[in-house]
Amino acid sequence: MKFISARTWNEEGKMTKSRKALIPVLSLSLILTGISAAFMTTSASAAPKYKVTYIPKNLGNPYFDAIVGGFNKAAKKLNMTVKVVAPAQAGATDQIPFIEAAIQQRVTAIAISPNDANALCPTLKRAMRAGIIVLTVNGDTNASCRQASITPTDFSVLGKYLVDQTAKVMGGPGDWAFLSATSTAPDQNAWLAGAKTYIDGGGQPGLKLVATVYGDDAPEKSATEASALLAKYPNLKAINAPTTVGIAAAAQVLSTSPLKGKVQVTGLGTPNQMRQYIKDGTVKSFSLWDPGLQGQIAANLIVSIKTKKVTPKEGVKFNIKGVGPESWTMGKGALIIAGPPQEFDAKNIDKFNF
Image 1 (tube, rainbow, N blue to C red):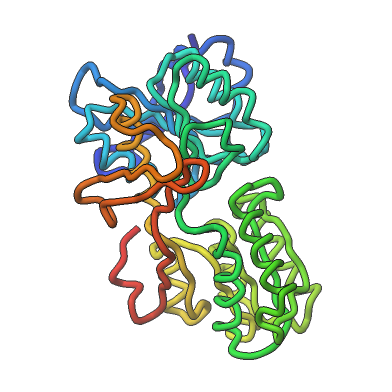
Image 2: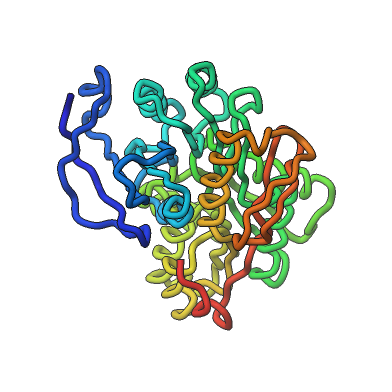
């Protein structure tokens, strides 16, 4: 057994001080070297009935911190303990050691925000064969690799939404670019594909998509890519970053640039990280949904599946009293759509705190 650095989450889903945690993981001392791990205990019970491992794409991302907050909020009422572990980087296979560890720990469920739609499948299938419930959150794998998937919004129309969002902040024709997460991220890739289909079909004909670049959900690389776009495309009028890390990095670059106000930044971000850029005029508007809602849905769904109250499949209705719209109907492949996007601008941003 090894001691590794861990971060602890309190009952409000906020990070407290670092500490040393004892992790009973088989042969992971080398695999986990240099990789962060965070823990969140959300039930006062000494012997929680449900033990869940949530694996976000990477740690240090405020978007996934909000999902953790949703798990935390639900777990307090469900006699559930949630352990949050993730790689330092969002590589395609970097989550596999954490899935393997959860299998050995015989957890009730694994919830994962996958970095790759296919690379994780063999390990996730092994978890299901071991009797572990597997859910994907905020991204998906092949449907055969999990029991159900919670997605933040209808990915099939989000590509069109992002193009229209860009047109709105540009206010006219011109060049624009996407600054995405990783090139293998299934959620962002689905959105980019939807955007291309919409553009190829004649959507927003005055807009010219000149580039799609990837910041790998790393602040420094995202900032570098944003700066490179500004240098390479002198007629650029907007950057759309459908990633909370990317949009904040691009906004930071523009906030101190002579191009502030001339090149617009929009995409998907959290109100707390983007508030300063709305208020200083760098950003007109951006969007997101409530990430915490996905965590709440996932925690409740795990219990419903474990107690055999819900069998995930198309057409099944799933209810959670007091959470979001309170009722969802599973779509094809047991997909649950949490809710529609919310636009944030100078008029409403102070009404939100996440």
